[in-house]
Image (cartoon, rainbow over all chains, first blue to last red; front, side, top):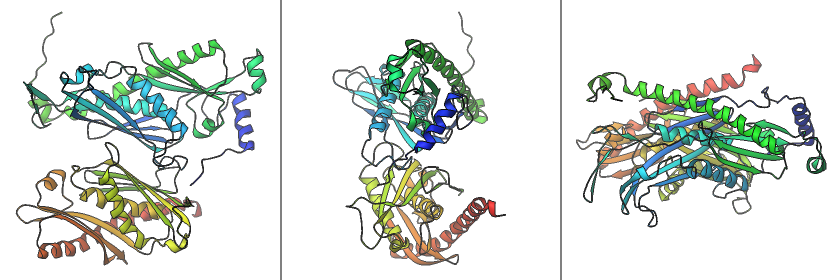
Length: 307
Length: 221
């Protein structure tokens, strides 16, 4: 099988020296996030996210299924993150590497376990029928930042997706087609955004553990090359309400508590920016879909809200 | 029907192409020739590793069947003898299926076409060009070329036909697959119609490939 990409010692020292001077190979500053380019598809719940050269496509789908016996009032939500050799030859088909496992766990924690999707709203008949929402994340091209990109893709997808309207009469469920009734959106409670920091230790391990210089460098949103050279990694998932949903630190590089606080603050700024970008995009998409004859013929009218 | 094709879109593989024809959208990547696992290795020819991934859900027997059919198309056209004991890995990601799970014709014809472009992009040696088209026969015995999702649903039978193409002319039948009820006469009609349709499709691909080559060799001008 094709081996993964290896970085030579020369390249490594070049990248390190540049980082010490606060320069990155792609011309970004240390704390810059790459431009996020999000495209929504014609189908509901189709999101294409490009983060530099990284490209991720998320598909959201819904079907009716039975809830877990111990959770009769909750629907199901699964995120499938399987990386194919399309993204890079370092990923093998149907065999999960350690990297892949870390990526899928991080997404699982940030999106599913933070309660971003209201599972109780997916319940149809308690104990027997519920909606099962599925997010399939397809990794097409890899240049670092899989966690960040797929988190954006899944969260945008969940907000963009519409499921078919249903009517319940007794034990009978009628699923209405899109032509028959306007499909309904999912209830998304908050939008966690993952921001990944990579740590570099320019002065050797001993200095890092015993010393007090705290010269560790951290950078935001690594490319693949930086990703392969990093000594430690920190992923912060935060939403725009300043709620931290997840912090996971891997790689074993000890670091200062204040650095952690600093990273949290920077992650928040990035999260706010991205949340607003997603919101704007969804609004534009809503407008595009609802203009024209369909909009004029709709039955609902602007109701006056009484405070 | 609209066909949109683009090549060299992915960075970490040797060749890639995306193809959107009608409602169906496919992206294909080719890595090769690369080192094969000992059990895949063939002493005189290249091994083909074909992975088809569905847009929604995990791979099922449906995708395995598609992989198998695609292998039937590719094995005779790839010059395997150029890459003995090596592997050509083809990964196909369905982005938008454009048909219900019971049908495979639109997906397979787009996959065959997209794989052709990706193989060209990866510079793998091919004996001959090829292209495919999907058809359906409606309940009033009308042949529909490249049916839409709803036309396919109300059809009596669905067909995929792929031809070898040399010098812009369809020469040999490469692959044909039909599901449903139809008469012998109808299948001959479809085969005839397919020959002209794949020639048209091939002209579009020639344009795409020409654009690609112009782009790739711009430094020579």
